[in-house]
Image 1 (cartoon, rainbow over the protein chains, first blue to last red):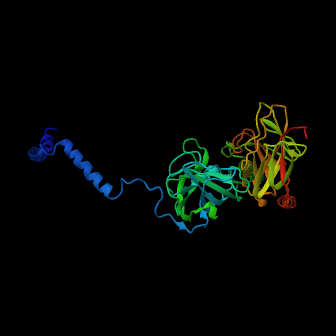
Image 2 (image 1 turned 90 degrees about the vertical axis):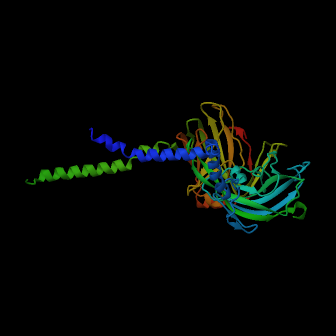
Image 3 (image 1 turned 120 degrees about the horizontal axis):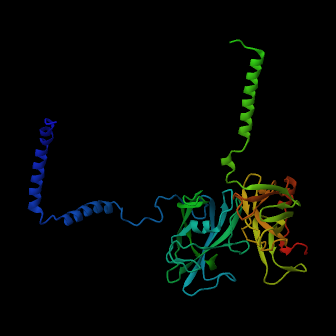
Length: 226
Length: 202
């Protein structure tokens, strides 16, 4: 046992010497590079390249590399196929939507087909479509770009209920827009897909994980010109 | 070791019994397969069926491109009560007598199941059936918006508590629609009238 002690003490000498030299060197600049300033410098060195490469930018709501289709072509998503047929703006619909001060309506008529094998809620459709127009709101006065529209069945004027498999339903989607904003000549429309899966907490099955799928740009015209 | 006839026969019988046992075991449902499945009671049109919460009897099927839901007096819809629904497909209207057995309740969560497995709900345009009291039967007509190719071989699923995939009592009623009947139903052009009434009234 006594032979082992010198063997363990020997390597410590150079390390202690290096530590002493480092302490001596730091003492020369310690009044400038205080521990707090060193931490700030480290944070700057991390955040600067991250921000230069866009890591601090807001997450884009519409990925720029989405596939696009021509106006009025079918938007193929999962589980809905949505074909725009008209896109108008106006002040009212007789007997259905009355004129409101300070707002105009945007009317997007679409043919919708549920391609799954079970009924799909109307909210899946209204959540699937996003308009790239300014100062939108629904007729229930929720504000924000992602405000879902109100949906009516065109053939009978009733509010849209469930969408049944393989039944094409003409639907009128209605947004409101602040009339102080000029009506755009064309609007970008993003359609999303969904995944049918069980909720990780409750186990209940449903359409989840909304993912932007396809993009189109539609000309917007006054309702009187339709 | 010397083989005897009785030894060979015994061996053969043991192997045969093991084979038969494996056949029986593979034919029996696995507990995991049925753990979350509904308890199905099968029936057909004009055959009363009882589920955990109600007695049911599908009395007929009809169809049309439109239905009108209203309170009718002498064949005329009472003002202010009417809803008219249209479709690009067909409304399959199922006449059903519904009688709760335990507590006041409504008929909910029905599905039409096509022969290929597609499910159709009664909530394209929701038409209520109930609530009604235990022992008081109600004659209802439930419209389903379906494509014409889903008519032949369709069944009606009626859950005890609103969910057809719950581990609960479920009626599976064969609507008796063969190919010829499906063609007739699919070609219907008349508007169908829907007016829930207590059983025994018009």
